[in-house]
Image 1 (tube, rainbow, N blue to C red):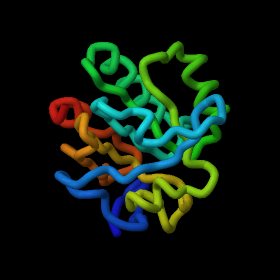
Image 2: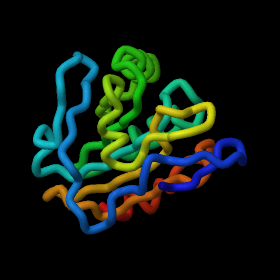
Image 3: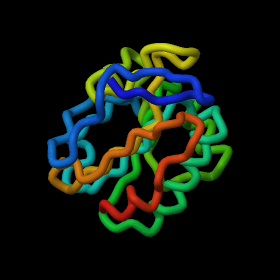
Length: 165
């Protein structure tokens, strides 16, 4: 389990991020139209998985905005913004912000994506939500970069994630 902090207070996750060089495991996440998306929906694309607790927090919203801005200049790359927010909240946020270059995916039903990837926060006030993390995947589903953000309130290292593409 990863040891991270929230406001300087220790919290833990259900495991460790997948290792660089391994294959991203398949997933079933809910899209804004309530349909199911899996890894095969993005076959042949490089992926940046921007994972966070909730789009309704300042840092999470900032990461979605930043990756939306970057995504418009990325070739053969899709940015997936993954949280346990309801798809309606994700769609509302991106609609209100005019964000069209990222794909929102929700793990609200059972949190299986978070559990499978060691992202579920297991204690503290955000227990059950995902930790803030980045996973970058090449066109073949191989993980090229990961970052478990040590302090949940901090933004990820955008430059390192984008450099891994």
